[in-house]
Image (cartoon, rainbow, N blue to C red):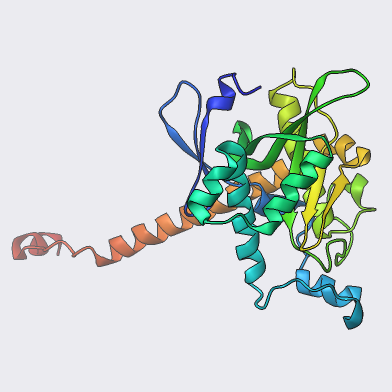
Length: 289
């Protein structure tokens, strides 16, 4: 899988969001958008974490302690876990100590849980893309496992979610799209399922020789790691999901092109208004009269 030309495309995160993609055999850098904003627009545009928590009405006595004191600490902790996981898998665990001095307990716990599930991590932040949508994304983790029934090695995609101790399964309503999945709510767990299904479809389309095994959403909390297997009905709706994501992406591209054209027209109009009027000599003026 990792030896073909496509796998050696250079996909880099862009400081302004999205990805910079250099296709095989080309030196041209292309700006591709990321998946999450387009997925939200297509499938769960009304989701809001605070509203979901409020609607769930979890009794205060049952709320789990997160160890976080500020709202933004959760994102900071999640970013650290993903960075350390990338270093551990792609370089080696010694790289964590060299870069961060110590390994965060959540990474230690997660790597131990992978061993318990007989999953061997092989690459973190593996990137792929759909050229026709100019859309790219990076998979949190690729693992391999041996299918005990067949003895064959399989690829397992893992989508890692850090935290969400309270409200991981709570949403504000049903999914908007695809229609066949509207029996699911728009919770963070369902959102992660859709990401995972999209990544699985990318591998299925672009690496057809790869044997894909069960794929998981892994929720890492202060006390444990919980694995949620990607449901079959979401896998079966993957092509429909791609269609709705594609439609949302095209709508965004058209809106951006319209905005760009309006700005260009306004700029031309402004430039024309500031242009000095041509001077008319007395002779030419007399001739017109």
